[in-house]
Structures are given as structure tokens and as C-alpha cells.
Image: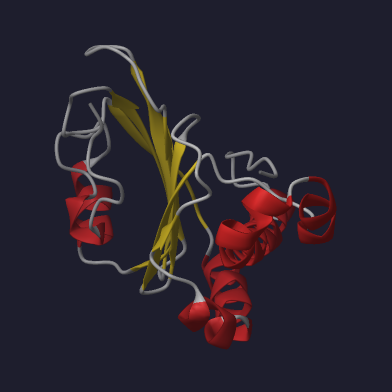
Amino acid sequence: MQRKPILPPAYACRNANSKEQNCQQVVNDTCIFEYQSSPGYGCAGMPGGYSICIFVSGNVVRRDYVLEEETPEKETIPATMPELARRICAIIEGHLQELKSIPGELNNGSPDGSHDCFGFGEKRISAWHIQRTDPAEIRHHNPRYYEPFRDNMKYENSVLDIYDEIAREINRHNVGVQMDSL
């Protein structure tokens, strides 16, 4: 059973292991970028994935989850970097038109893999087993798959391109959270 995909920004710090003053600052802050990954299956009490959230203030928050639990098992604020927040805002603003065209739920036909949720400003996107694909190659090798999923492949590639651009910026700022390419 899965937890709810993307937690609202005001959720930050409830039952967290952070200092009270930092908690209040994060609760009143606005999330500009969030990535959350959770396993597609598992039993209660098992690791349930994690999330990274960058707030307008520059706070970087990492949350670790346990399956079947609503609250994070652990929450840390490894850094506060206003310049990073400004760069991420600029990246998202550069992709606003593209983001508007992407549906909130992506479906590539795979019920397997992880559940990935992305928050780019106000845009929320949920996907199971998101992956980068070469539509021309898929069209050539598997036309029966290509036809029903061609738009989804384009959307998934766009989401991953934007995510990778933001992940490179987060890694460049060395905030104590390593973002891998998806």
C-alpha cells in the first residue's frame, strides 16, 4: 500500500527531528521543487522512500519515510541556500510552457518500479517507473507500444530533462544531498 504521493509544503516538520525554529520557518515557506520516490511494493515498516524539497527561502529538506506511515521517519535540513532557490526558480520559469502541457499523471503502461512524484513550482507530476526513452527507437522496434504511449514518452523525457537540470544545480551547490540522474 502506498502513502500519498506529494506531501503539502505545510506538512514540513511535523513529528520531525529538526530544531523548533527551523520547523516554523519551513512550515511558513513555499516549496518550489520537490522530488519524492517510493517503492512500488513492500510491507509496513520497510523503508518507504524519500523526498527532497527546496523552499523559496533556500531551505533544503530531506525526508525519509517508512511504508504505511503518514509522517516522515526522519527529516533533516542539511542547508539553507537562497541562491540555489533563485536558480531553481529560474530553471522552472524557463520550462513553464512545457510544464503546462504535461499531464499531472503519467502512465507508460508499467505497473512495476518506483512511484516518482515531482513538484515544479505549482505543477505536480506523478509517474510509475518513469524512464527516459528514445521514441524513434521504440517506434521502430515496438510499434504496438509506441502508438498508445508516444505522448507519454515525450512527457516523461521532458520531466526527466527538467529534473536533471535541477539535480545538476543542487549538486553544484553541494548542499549535502546528492541528486542522481533518473
